Length: 176
Image (cartoon, rainbow, N blue to C red; front, side, top):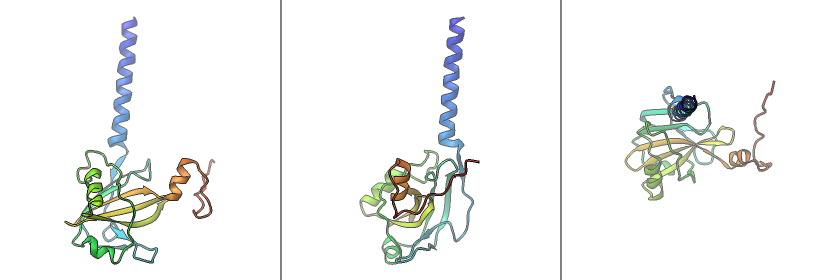
């Protein structure tokens, strides 16, 4: 009887672990529907409203379980130097990892290109979700990447420190 119970416990643990792995890596993600002319946008210098840039071969994934799971890849004929003359640069140089099966988005390679000056990152949208900005990186060879990153207000809101007056009020939560 003890062996049978041990076997049940081991199998239950393996099943739960497998389910958790699947849900984190595959289950919550879905492909993002194309929105031509709105998929890749950047904030012009001195403005707050994003404008679209030329792009092709766009593919993206997102998950409703977290505002920072968005990842996208695209191609453009625009050069980072030309974009930097017109659009707001971002200080974000370290993209978040994507699931391994989303082949076009390699966070380590993108981070290296940004660090080595072979790519430039831009602000795409401020507070796309409370405390979360959308960042776009464009490489010298015309590849582009998009991800979401916590801004200062988001970092404060999620780590429990006082948000302060410089941040917009967080969205209200209805507990009804």
